[in-house]
Every structure is written in structure tokens, then in C-alpha cells.
Length: 108
Length: 117
Image (cartoon, rainbow over all chains, first blue to last red; front, side, top):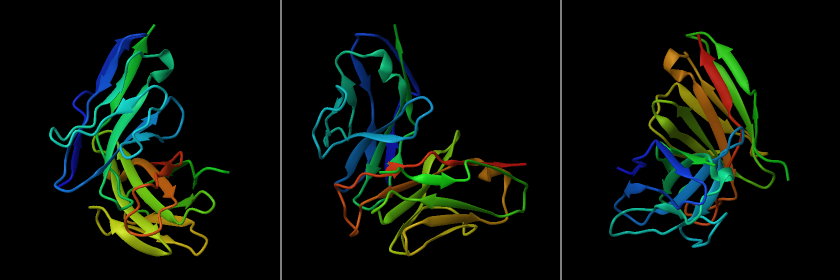
């Protein structure tokens, strides 16, 4: 069965510190991995996806098939990064399997 | 371009009733997916429609159903409501066409918050 695990429900870091939000998945095929973000009073929106291999708002994520992980990283956190982050998996169809989410708080 | 629009934003129903939620996708998007979000279970996939046909289905009972119209607008219906159906129901649309679409992200609406008394 497909499963996405985000081990941290809450993560708090200081502004300027590095951030890493963990995501592990279980899937026997070749999944597509995403990070979605929900800022306060906004709708859920796509942050980045592994096939794009791009950096969005300073965030990057590398798919590690050996460790079945897709951790989200940013070298220097900013206050506007405070939000709810969801890791999600898809196997090509328009069906996303989400993790439980991590609430990131950036302290000034 | 207008985003995904869901109506109504809030609904209050009682046990045993039925409810219909509506979703208008982004213009040009033909794939519409529905998700249920609860504090306990998180975000769970309900079903996906494309060209008026249900293509994918999650693990929900038959009380949860949906349909899609020729203009890609979609509705989902929940019959015989239970207290556990209280949730935020999210709709998402994408440019997905075929069964495999690695480059088509989903765009979410604000959701309909359903409360069952």
C-alpha cells in the first residue's frame, strides 16, 4: 500500500536557521513526489515536485529512492515560511496520497 | 484565470440527511478530484472525474458519490450523513488528460466545511 509519513507534526526553528521537513514514503513502483503548502488563511498550493528538480522560494527536495525519502530543505528560514507543509505521493494518476502534515513555525 | 471555486463554503446538516457539494474547476481543466480532510485522518482521496467518468476511487463507502458535467463542473453527494462525515471537503482540478500525467499538478479550492449535528 502507498503511504507517506511525516514524522514531525510540529517544527519550530529560528529565522535564518536551516530547515528540514522530513518525508518518507512506501511504494513499490516509481512514484511522483510533491510538497504542498498551506499558508494561514490560504488554500493548499503546490510548492514543488521531484520531477522538476527546481528550487521554489529557496526550498529544494531530493528524491532518495534508496531511503524512500523526499525531505524538504531550505538553508535559511524566513518568517513567511511559517505554514503547514504536506508531502504527497502519486503514481501517475490524479490521486494524491498525503502525509499528515508538518506545521512549521519560524521564530523571529 | 479564476481558481477552483467550491460552493457552499459552509454547511450544517443533521444525521441522516444528504448533501451535495459543488466544484467549478479552473477553465480548461478537465480532471476534478475530491478529498476529505479531517483532524484525525488528514487528507484522503475520495474520487477523480475526467470527461464525465469516474477514473479513480478512494476507500470510502458507497454513501459518497460524485458526478461530472460536460462543462467539467463536478458535484459530490453524501447520503445518510453520519457524525464522522464532518470534515473539510476539498476539490482540485488539473490539466490531466490521459491516465498517466506526471506533469500536471492539482490546483485546490478553498473547500466546503461540512458540519454534522
